[in-house]
Amino acid sequence: MKTAAVNSFAQMTRIALAATLLVACMGNASAGLFDDEEARKAILDLRQKVQATEQKLAEETRRASEESAQLQRNLIDLQSQLDVTRTELAKMRGQEEQMARDVAELQRQQKDAVQNVDERLRKFEPSRMTIDGREFLADPSEKRDYDAAMAIFRKGEFAAAQVVFVDFLNRYPKTGFRPSALFWLGNAQYATKDYKDALSSFRALVAMGADHMRVPEALLAIANCQLELKDNKGARKTLDDLIANYPASEAAQAAKDRLARLR
Image (cartoon, rainbow, N blue to C red; front, top):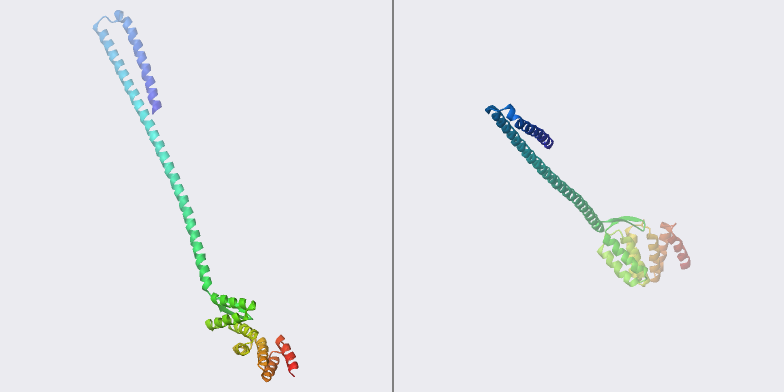
């Protein structure tokens, strides 16, 4: 649009210059060519045409200038709008990236929370245990208390071990640790020369099942308690039963040695 206005302006300028030259020439020759009223009229008409042309040229120039200024304003407004749009897009991208980070953080926190809950639940869930050849389910508290009693026994604190084993058996009457707990309780009682209670503990173990791996040792311990209590007859019978029922056990070999000394 701006180029068209400039071309129009140039065209009008050439017309104006031609008209001016024409007027000058006619002015010099008017005395000789036009002495009458028609010549003056022609000159006036020509001047009016020149003035009209100049006015039109000025109007076109003004309009072209206004259009050019409006176009520049429009371009400036468009550039401003583009800048605002770019800024808004950048802001939206930043918000989307922050949202993505927030979502990722929330997912991580949720995963951690689920894991923590699972770990806490596992602390209260029964776990599979294998003690003295027996497999069973035990609550975490059972294992904790049994391990605590065994730790005291291993320290050689047999009197204290008796207390904690008795407490353990009372609190967990159906525990899978019961046969093993009875065996070590009997050993703690024997160590403190509490032979009668030791005898009861070992017999309770044997009564729970003849297939328990601690039964041959328990029978040998029963015979030892009977010997300490001066029940030699009972001791010989217990040793004979041990040899007859568990001939391949190490306890049976020890029983043979005891019987040989008793005879």
